[in-house]
Every structure is written in C-alpha cells, then in structure tokens.
Length: 314
Ligand code: BDR
Ligand code: CA
Image 1: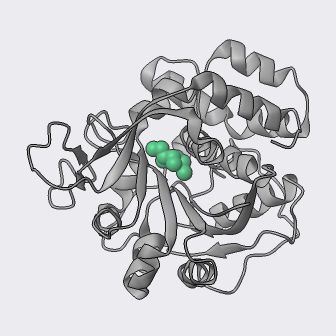
Image 2: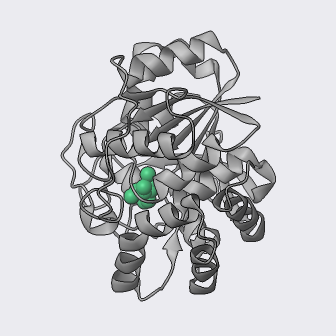
C-alpha cells in the first residue's frame, strides 16, 4: 500500500486528483494538507472536505489547513480560472467532516516520521507547507520516499507569466528551499500537462454521458476552467494537470520519458519570478537534483480517469 500526503490548493482539477488517489485500492491517503493558491483559503479547505465526502471517505481522511500565505510574497488568487468557489460556481453545501486542528506542517512532519521512507508527497499546490516542514524538521528530507510536484515548466511556457507556472510563481521561495533540500523530486511541468493531460470535446462528451455522481461532479467543477482556457487560448478542453500528476504516482508507467536534470528557480527577479530553469545542456555542470517528466501516455491516463469517473475503484 502506497502512503501519500496530498498538498493541495483545492479547486477545479485538484478535486479530480484527490478523487483518483482516494479511489485507488493501492493507495492510502495519510493526509490532505491545504496550501494557499487558487482561491480563498477557507474555501479551499471546504472544497477538499467536500471531495473527501463525495469519494465516500468521510471521517477517514483528515484535512489539515496549512499556510494561508506564501513565505514572503503577495499573490493573486484565480477565481476567474476556477469560479468564485473554485468549484465552477457550484456552491456545494458544507461537508459533515470538519478540518483538523493540527497545522498541516506538523501533520506532514508527524506522518513522515511515523512512516520513514514510505510516504510519497504529492504537491499540487504552491510548496509553502513542504518548505516550512523541511525547515522545521530537516531530517524529513531523507525520510520522504519521493515528492511528485505539478509545477514549473520545462521550457518556459508559463501559464501565469510567459516564464512561470502558477504553483511555483505563487511561492518561488518555498520552491527554492524544496529544490535544494536534497529530497527526491519528480517534476511534472505545465507544458507536459497541456500536452498529455488535456481532455478534448469528444472526451468531455463521453464523460457527460456517464451520468455518475463522479462524472457530474467532474463536469461541474471544471466548467469555468474549460471556459477560461477557451477564452484565453482558443483551445476547447479541460486541463487536468494535478490529475495527471497523481495518475503518475498511481501508475509510474504513465510517465514514459523521465530524465535526471539540475533545475533551479528564479526567486530574485520580478519579471521571471517563479521561472524554473531546467539545465538541459548541463552547462552549469551541477549534479541533477530531480527527475523531470518529458513525455507521458495520455491513453493510460485517460483509462485510469475514466474508470474513476465510472464510479469504479482503480
Ligand atoms: C496549477 O495551478 C493551479 O491553478 C492548478 O490547481 C494547478 O495545480 C496549474 O498551474
Ligand atoms: Ca492545484
């Protein structure tokens, strides 16, 4: 049984990513931790709790609120991408389960120390919580099995600025700490998600026709994200960056090309705040500090997703 902690700024596709892990028979979700990011913090907490309930895990998977702000900077939430509630303006009722009292950073540290070398951390949000956990207990670095993160770009095709992807842009200082901590890392960058993690109109229509509670939920929470992508890029599709990242954890063969690279992040300049520099030609001559995904199997990802959306255990 794979043990995971999922750090999330729960909105839109974050919920599908959570559902995939919560519905996997090979995975035990030790904790869901909430980091500032997509929409208002308390709304993100509610969105995670609602998703846990919908997945049939009410009371079994704890949700820990964490960093309400990045380490040093201000950022803007993105209600225009995910809707006012982050859930495609669905305004779901509050779940019965309530958030834990313990801070996400302490929950992470405790879970990792209790299960040395067993916990995979999935970062589908800015990395403030993880950076704080590493600063508070540096020993966890060698006890984390691996961190998979949805974030950054392989070749500077950003979604929030031309240079940067949102999760890393929100808290580049946290990313700096994590990248240089020595923890095992796998990066799933924005262009890879746009290439292999986009659902096109025929696939969306297939999902609509399922009429399961999972598929109805999926369509609702991603409705504003679909409109936003169409308006901003002309592409009619639903982007699933966090979901394809979780899918790679559940089935590592979904990542079909992975290379070891040295990657740094710009936390110095304003214009390229949060840009991830992948040293493709090894001109810095530095030891690689992470694995970077270059190619993925869309068909394997889609099969896994469809199984979950049909209401099946994956
Ligand atoms: C990432 O930023 C957030 O908006 C999404 O949830 C995803 O994790 C994409 O850049
Ligand atoms: Ca996210």
